[in-house]
Structures are given as structure tokens and as C-alpha cells.
Amino acid sequence: MTMAGVAIVGRPNVGKSSLFNLLAGRRISIVDPTAGVTRDRITTTIAHGEGVFELIDTGGHGVEDRDNLTDEIESQIRAAVDQAALLLLVVDAKTGVTPLDRTVAKFIRRFAKPVLLVINKVDGAGQAQAESEFFSLGFPDAVCVSCTHHRGRGELLDAIAGRVDLSPAAGIDQPVLKLAVVGKRNAGKSTLINTLAGCNRVIVSDVPGTTRDSVDVSIRMEDKTFLMIDTAGVRRRSKMTTDDLEFYSYHRAQRSIRRADVSLMLLDASLEAGDVDQKLARYIAENFKPVIFVVNKWDLVKGRASPADFGQYLGTLFPQLAFAPISCISALNNDNVLETLQLAMNLYQQSGIRLPTAQLNSVVEEIVALRGPGSHHGRRIKVYYATQIDVHPPTIVLFVNHPDAVDEEYERFFVRELRQRTVLREVPIRLLLRGHRSRRPQGDPA
Image (tube, rainbow, N blue to C red; front, side, top):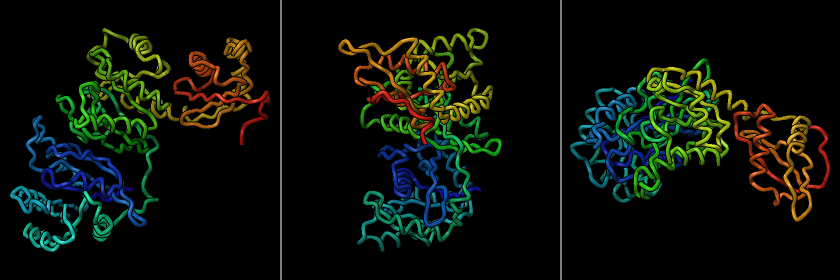
């Protein structure tokens, strides 16, 4: 079932992204005084009462983008308005009606869509005056809010529900898989998203840093819904400052990795991997996320390199993710893209496998026979048994007599051997050490 769309439109710096975050109840869109921060369409699902709708944030209409992306931003705004069942025209009570507000009003009237005027930055005393001034734009229905002071959210949601047929939450298709597409600048993340979406869902440009927010894009394939999370390209952290837009983009990329079931780490086949790729790999490993190294722009090096060459190269460069599979693609030419999506699905399923306790302990005995964890103050460290307590990621508890004495090198060895001897070959495994007396478990845990 398709949800009704509600698009937020307006000139730059009236608080569109602040309104988006207010209605969502969390920070999704980047909010910054810099005009033109939002470029792509940012979407989220909003629940109200027993129904839901899709809220769409857009860039500022009429912005002069410093990277010459104005036409692309305007195209994204038009697509959002076309898609929407209701438009929220946001204006600024502190500045009053401006010529650009009138331009935006003229622009959206061409689409013949219902419009709800949202007057932002209103305090209680100035509400009546604000409403009367903005009625000159030609839209009689208005709601006053203050995004900064979190006022007016309930009233606005009620007003939206009164103008849009909300979809029942139970009828909305949930994604079978959430995929975070991460990598450094210009690796081809947005091109991959657009190829899968079959349209220009996000802006693609040679300009580094074109994508700033994390953009959720639903992809429907073979009766399955996939959620693709396009992220901002990451640059070296030493070049960021805490008030830099890319500082916020980087942290949203990290949040996208945490949200996702599987990460697609894009690498440019024509360039060497560097410090940024190392940081992303470490963060993915620290969060125990299944990951595919997606080597993009393969058409540029085909014949001069092989997947095996890249496998050896990446295994050396990213030893903490040496188990991760590699997929060589051309996002622009749609080469091996669907196969990569299927591989991601396989990884997610693999990460959800629960090993039978008997099988797990048989493997543990083999590993300990091959190499034990050593000794502690002259006493041998004994491994008693193991049990799996969770999936996504597979989480194994290993019971030993001196858990604090088992060093990290042995833990890495143990997990590596466990991975090679079970079906969990291409996914991260979380190992927990616990002290326990010598007692073997009886069968699988309940």
C-alpha cells in the first residue's frame, strides 16, 4: 500500500527542516543557518492516531546553490510536489511576507494541490497578526507553530489528518532489509541508489559533498521492499570542524550504519582506498554489521585487475573485515547491481542463523584442540563450553575459568576458526567471555 505524501515547501531558511524534525519527533534533516543545506528529498513515516503518512522535506525554492546545483534541487522539489497529496507551505513570522514567499506561492498553485499554510516562529501574542499578514498569499488555511519551542505539533498533525486520507499502519509494507550505502566522496553512492530506484531519486553530481543528509529510499523488487539509505560522502575527519555541515553529515552516516541490517561500503575501483575508508571499516566492525565491499566503476579497470586481486588487497587493508564478501559493479551501467542486492539479503539471512548447541560445542572442541587459550599465573585456562544467545549479529558466549586472562589475539583466532568451521563465514560474530564452573549444557537453550 502506498502512503499519502505530505511535502514541506518554502523559500530558504524559513525552518522547513526544523518543521520536518518537529513532526518526526527526532533530528533527521540537518538544520543549519546556511541557506541551501537540504538538497535531496528527505522522507520519513509519521504516525498519527491509527494512521500514517509520508512526510517529505525539500530544499529551499529559489536558492542559489553555491555548487551550481540549483536546477537539480528545483527538480527534486517538483518531484516532491508531484508526489504529494498535501503541501505544507512554510513561512517565517519574524520576517513577514517576502517577494520570494509570493514566488513560492505562485509556483505551487500551478500544481492544483491542497495547501496548508504553516507559519513558523510564532509566539502566542503575535499569532493573530501573523495569520492576517500571510493570508495575502492566497491560502486561507493556516496553522501557527514554533519549531524552536516545540509548539503547535499536535495542532498541525490534526490539521494534516483532516485533509489527507491516512493509510492504516498495518497495511504498509515493511522493508525486508535496510541497507546503508557508505563510502568516501564521489564513490558512486547516489548513482547506485538511482539505478536501483529507476529514477533520479537523489542528486548526482561530480561536486564532492553533494549529498549532505542521509536519504531513505524505498526500493520495490520481486514483491519485496528494500530500504536504501544514501549517506553523505565522508572526508578526512581532520578537515572537519564541529560547525561544519559535513560534521553533521558524518555523524548521520554513522547513525545510518547503526540503523542498517547490512552496510554496502562503496570503493572507487580506479582509486586507492585511504584513511576515510579505514575509519568507516572500523566503525562497521565495531558495530558488528554485515558488510559487502562494493567495488564500483569496475568498467574503468576491467581487464587490468581481477576480483581476486581486490580480495587480496582489501583483506590486507581491512583485516578486521577480511571475511566480508566483495562485489564488483558499475552502478552507472547497472552491472552486477541486482546480484549485489541478493548478496546483501543472503548476508542478512546468514547473520540470523542460530547454531545448535551440540554443533557449536563440537566446533569449540576442535578449536581448543588446535590451540588453547594458554595459561594464567601458571594455571591452564580451561574452556568449558559455549552457547549462542542472540542473532543479528550471532552472539556466542564462551565459558572459561579465567575470562579476564584470555587475550584479544586469542579471541580473534577463536572467532576466525569458528567462522571457517560453521555457516557463519561472511558475517561478524560477537564473542563474549564468561566465568563458569565445569558443566556442559544439555541441548539447545529454550
